[in-house]
Length: 399
Ligand code: FEO
Image (cartoon, rainbow, N blue to C red; front, side, top):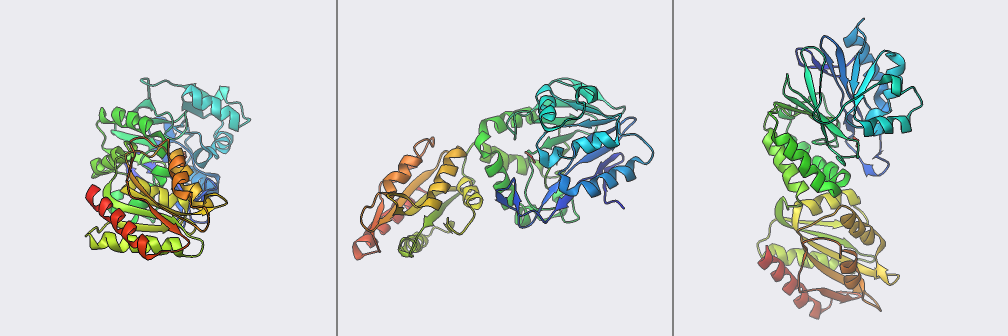
C-alpha cells in the first residue's frame, strides 16, 4: 500500500500524519495531530528531502518503495537532524545501503551522535553557497542556525524554484488530504497553530529567523515546502509577513491578553471586571486565559499576537502563583519584546505578586509598564473598582 501525492512531474509528497501523539516534543499538546513531511524527487538520480518521525515509518517506507520501484534511492538531503524528521534515517540507510546523505558538517556530526551506522561512508558534506545536481535539478544550500537547531539548513531547488524550508513555515495540525495551503482555509484552520508552533519552538530565535528571511528574500520562490503542515505555492508573501512580525516581536494585532491565576476566584473576578471596562471603552480584541487551565503554549502564542498583556496573580508561598510563574518564565525564555504590560495582584496577608511578576519579566526588552496596578486584599472591594477603571482607561489610552 502507499499514500503519496504528486507535487509536479517528478516531485512527490511521501510524508504522513500522526494523530495519536498527545504531546509534541513531550510538551506541546497537539489535539489535531501533526504532519511529518518528506519529499521525493525522481530525477536522473533519485533524491529524498528529509525523512520522517518513526511514528509514521510504515507509510513512509511504503511510499518510497512504491515510487522508486526498482530504482535505487541515491541521495537524501538532511536539512534538520531532530528525530521528528531524522529518526528513520538509520532504517533508510539500512534499506538503501548505497545512499549518500547530503548535509553540512554540523548536521553530519549530530547524525553521528544519534546513530551508530557508518556515517562517514554515507555522507557528502556540503557548505552554504555550494550546489549539488541530481540531473535536471540543481540544489543550493543555505544554513539556518537555530531554526530550529544549530545544524538546520534550507535547500533551494534552482530548477523548480522550490524552497525546502525545514521547520521554518511549519505548523502543528495534521494534513487532512489536502497538502497545499491554497486548498484549505489556512487562516481559519491553521494560523493559530502555526503561530503556536512558531512562537514556542523557534520564538526565542527571532534574530536568526530574520537572517533566514533575508536569505530567502534573495531567492525567486515559487513554492515553500516545510517539514510540518501545508505547502505554500500561492500567497507566499502573506505567510512570510507573519514570520516577519513574529520574528521581529512585532504585535500582530492591537489587543489585550489577560492571563490570570486565581485560587478561589477573587483575582478572576477582578479580571472579568477589567475586561468589561475594556469592552465599555470600545476595545474589541480581548482574550482571557486562566494559566492553570489553558496550556502555557497557547497563552505564549497569544502573547506574541497581542500588543498589551495584563498579568493577574495571587501571591502564593510569598511568590507568584506557580502556573503564572511558569508562564512568565516562558515569556522570558522566548525573548518576547515590544509589549505593554500591566499587573493585578492579590494576597490575603502579604501582597507581593505584582512586584515579583515585574521582577521575573525584567529581561524583556522594549517593555512599557503601565502606571496603574490593581492590588487586591483577598477580594475585590469598592476602592478596587476605581483602580480597575483607571487601569482600563490607561490601557485604552495606550492602545
Ligand atoms: Fe520538526 Fe525541529 O523539528
